[in-house]
Image (cartoon, rainbow, N blue to C red; front, side, top):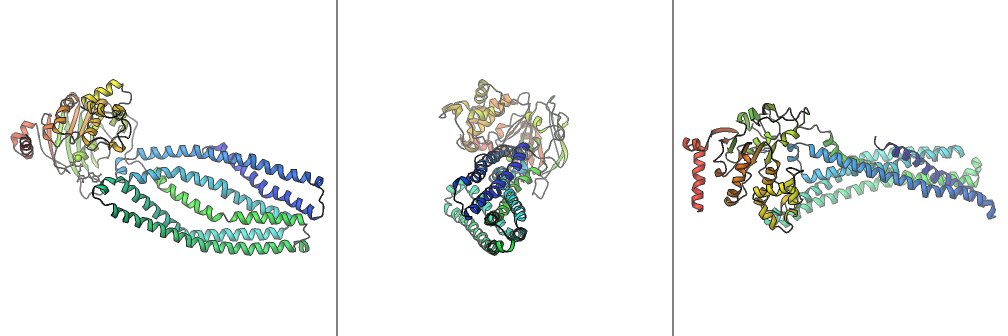
Amino acid sequence: MRYKIRTLLLLVLVPVWIFVSNVVVPYGTSQIIGKLSSGDFEINNYIGLLLLTIIPAAINNLAVIRAIDWLDWSIDALGGEYLSRLAFVAVINQSMTFHNNKFSGSLTSAANKLPGAFIDLKSNFVWDLYPLFLTALYSIITAAVICPPFAAILTIYTIVYMVVAIVTYYKTRNVDEKLADAENKQTGQLADAITNEMSIKSYARESIEKVRFGNATKRTKEATFNVAKVSFWRNLSMNAINMVTFTGLLILIVMSHDWFGLTIANMVFLYSLSNSLLSNVWTINHILRAINRAFGNAKEMVTILDLPLIIDDKTDKPLKITKAEIDISHISFQHQEQKQKLFDNFDLKVPAGKSVGLVGISGSGKTTLTKLLLRFDDVLSGAIYIDGQDIRDITQRSLRESIAYVPQESSLFHRSIYENIAYGKPEATRDEVIRAAKLANADSFIRELPDGYETLVGERGVKLSGGQRQRVAIARAILKNAPILILDEATSALDSESEALIQGALVNLMKGRTSIVVAHRLSTIAGLDEIVVLKNGQIVERGSHQELLGAGGEYAKLWSRQSGAFIKEK
Ligand SMILES: Nc1ncnc2c1ncn2[C@@H]1O[C@H](COP(=O)(O)OP(=O)(O)O)[C@@H](O)[C@H]1O
Ligand SMILES: [Mg+2]
């Protein structure tokens, strides 16, 4: 366990605190009352007793409890930091498939709840559970010294109370769980609505969303009332046990002079001991609930922490690029939750330094293929080799360092444009960043933004147009200067004019690099070394632009349709 010394100190200091506040101070007070009841009102006779009571109380409040408080906070700070980072790394390291299947909102909250649950659990132990245990222990032992029958009642009371509390708690836990579940669903709806604000607004569906959210809050409200009902009956029975015990103890105290020859001082002392026990035992309900809640809150993130990484580095061997030849060899692949294999015994070689264009209707598997190259998923059979090395046998980091990838939908960080471009090469100089932006035809629009390169782009880059985002993403890839280039519809959001402007940059970029270019607009790929036409995960045609036009197949059809469109445009 981490923070050993702090924890040990807590384990020692809490017993001191409870001993002083529940035994020493009540003892001193009871002695004073005992003396008073004997008719001695001479202040000088009380100085010793007063000091014996006040000094421990002062040390307790001014030093011991303050030290416990400080240790408690410092463990919060240290443990909170450690667990937040742990959760962050665990989430970041998960595969793309994992992320595709999760709501980012619920992942965020799971990661946030982990440190919170730790802090709750620990505070609960320090301030409630451990003090409760010590109070019971001290009260019973001290009472046993003074008057064993009294201690017997306290023991029986504590056991009965705990058993009833724990049994009823387990019986009623499901209402608590239902409440937590309702609250989670409500949060989920809130997050879903906020992320889809654009759809809500553009379809003017605010009222429908209000009703949906209203249903969620209604379920939370009902669940809260259920918890309240259950708590009401449980607390009523607990109160009844307390009343019976209190009555018994009070009668015992009144009779104790006759029965056991107790002094007034000891009667008062016993009363104090039982009073602190009775009021402390009450916290058990709160303790059990808090513990359950904390475990519930931590559960999701703990499951994620335990999850084996689907895409894991088998070795720490880095990829060694010699020529950057890509060999996709007899692979098959099936998306999760899809009925059929997308690729079955698929083969494609991209010779070193050559460029291949991928075309095909939407859904034919182009994006999936590029993602497999980046090892966002593993193939079911067959293998992908880069310079003869199976990409599963090298580190993901070295693989992805060697590939500049512009995805179909590039999202940007809510950071400055400069930082977003420099992401491709964090150690780049300002000149390099600006040069990359110029090559991507992004420099001029960036300079017109209010803060130029320092402009913040909004969450996921929403403050830029689709085409501007793409140009920033292309600049980032240009800056990365990797031996392999993968462009997945990287220019799809650009108008023909902007595209033509960066076409030259892309051609330059591809020189000497092994490139795979997915494009919808065939003019983008007409000049590439080879064009591959995909259909349902299979290659239906391949060859150079001229060859494919000559063959008069799918490609030729697509081409005539598109160039026809261009003629009309003019
Ligand atoms: N994460 C995913 N989970 C399940 N199926 C997917 C996933 N991504 C893509 N698919 C499916 O795989 C097929 C190929 O998709 P994709 O590779 O994106 O095609 P393209 O890029 O050629 O339009 C489609 O039928 C699509 O529905
Ligand atoms: Mg695609």
